[in-house]
Length: 187
Image 1 (cartoon, rainbow, N blue to C red):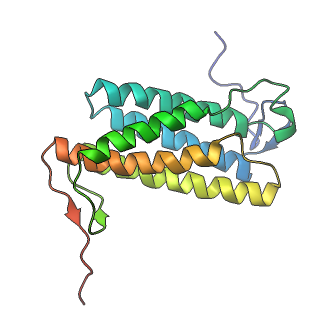
Image 2 (cartoon, rainbow, N blue to C red):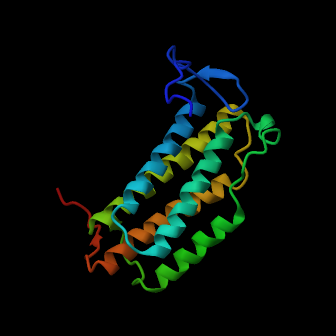
């Protein structure tokens, strides 16, 4: 097995999948670093969960995030050459199915919900907000770089943040933790 450290990034540069060297301060590196952060938050959320269905879908989500990260670590014109895995429509469909299933068990929303409740639910909201940030950064990257977003990436991230919102509500219900409804602060 190769050593964990290569020393090739000691001067603030890293290699893309193609071998092209770029600054670690580039928007591309920031974007897939934040994608990795999201993946780590999801892994941490899983440490609070026992539901096998949620955990199985969670592992598929984490793999899809790695697929997306591999595409972002490669220039658009080189993605096909390296046969990088794409985010599939099937994972998006699984997210939609899970959202619909959980939502059927929840009371319809009449107010905004504040992040909180059980520890797992609160952390699901952390995953949701980090996912939204990654989605915004991907849109910004596409606009600035003039590269296309990897296949299905924007749909996936948009649906994924919806999933973590509903999952947070669902986990509160399952843990019998009350949802905290937003009430405007009065000065």
